[in-house]
Image (cartoon, rainbow, N blue to C red; front, side, top):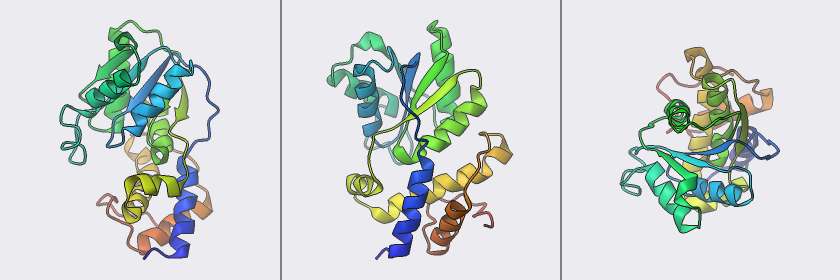
Length: 221
């Protein structure tokens, strides 16, 4: 049973992980591969709304996607986009990335090889990965403007879609830890984390929402 306090803390992290950017048309939309086909759906919706003339789907496979997406995350995303009416000429695939840094670096290379002039990127991720994706892209591709996007939904709606509340909170906690420690490792830019978010993170770690934490453990808060 998840406590009322844990739900309150999880919502603090959920809100922080989303950038709240105002959507606007960009040179390209990049959908970051994961277990969640909702990323592809969000990319298609934004394409149809005229927010980007070209989609790039990036991602290989991982232990959590190998069975569900045996041909690779980016390939399955592309297939989803074509099913939803996006022309094949408007979709590029980057099938080798295995982490967020790879997603950015390899997508940039694919676009350069295709001769696409990029000044802005609509970066599409799972809702709780918006800030991590943004921070990574700003580090690795600082010359372009990054606009973060995801499927609009509440934490409760996302939990319903996944079907495992504890796992979702674990993922929120793991994503926050990476925002705290990855800047020191050169993987992303550093961002200010409000004190109430840090305290919520610490309480959730103490309550055992730790399956997605890296071995370095949680920083002191």
